Length: 489
Ligand code: BES
Ligand code: MN
Ligand code: ZN
Image (cartoon, rainbow, N blue to C red; front, side, top):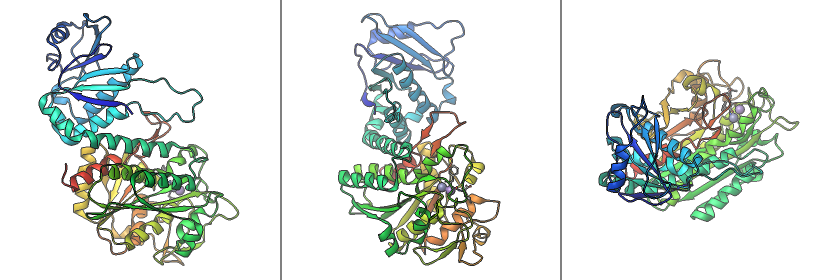
């Protein structure tokens, strides 16, 4: 992770100096030494230089040998926003690394958006994560880029950034942890391996960790997760972690299918490798847990991670099977590829039976949600308008796309079973909504609950723009939601 330091002035040798400029304005040189500021302002661009967005000017600063400055055009001030800031910072750090710099001093654009605490948090953590790579499986490690960034801020911005510095670093570490787990290939990241990571996390942060193995799951009559895990040589686990001694009880549930072949209702071959990301709900909960525990947020947390691998096999569960879940409801299996809802049925009903104040669940549950909202976004389902509003606003402030979807009764009706209470597959239309309606059968009388279908946001897959891999979706919005619930933000 890149080290970030906040400063209101100064200049060091061997650093790259990055100065932003809005179209038709002077470069922002407040805080720089007078001589340097004068020199930067005297730089003239080539023909056509208007400080448009993405226009860059590189010049020698003179004085100290080899010192360089880069002036980045940001386009029109009135078009600049939080997203523009984050994208720009990421780009600056990447390009500085490619140019061979280990340390870079970036003057923060003077703009109202930078004074918002949530924006500052996104900006700070984006810098921390700008060098994120998953290269544990590469024989030759990638080149190292920028190691440290000094942000030059106005007094006003400095106060804001100082306030969010620690939150931002833990957020970045939580996102990185979620990505690392998500990216880990399914031959290593088995249910037991994931459980071991949770035990480790528990040791590091003083959480109580309990891991149910198949025998424990049988004793608890958790037929959903047992059925899904039956076809795999890597038996299922259900992890329960808790920590925190004061405040409301917050339950976090995350789908952890370490690999989803579809089982007997097997998936097509194309992009099946991406089903290693089917554990990203659990990974998000892991990242949230890490950050929330590190920051000692004033809540009593409980995290539930159902972990299973969905494989076809002689012992695998099959269409037509009827299984009984933890809350006693029976489900007729119509499609073994609708496995996420089966493991969540047990985890959610266990979590709900322990009466939390609020329960959030994250899952790469349906392709239908990606059809509806596109990639990069997640669907929010909750019967509670206030909770919906809080989560949508947290997502908006965290720069994550979240969109509310309906829990209408017809979607529940579509999930009634022929010979069981429920079936795990509905009709052709509104698949994400039907899946959410199915889950709502397992929350008991819990009112404050939300389901986030993160299938579209959890990873960047083939054919999508950007660096491929797990994103850590959900960690930023949830940490923001927690901080504002704690009255800190
Ligand atoms: N893990 C998938 C959902 C998914 C699809 C996640 C694409 C990420 C990208 C889930 O288990 C699944 O297979 N869902 C089925 C449900 C269907 C059988 C009702 C789907 O979406 O096709
Ligand atoms: Mn599936
Ligand atoms: Zn799945």
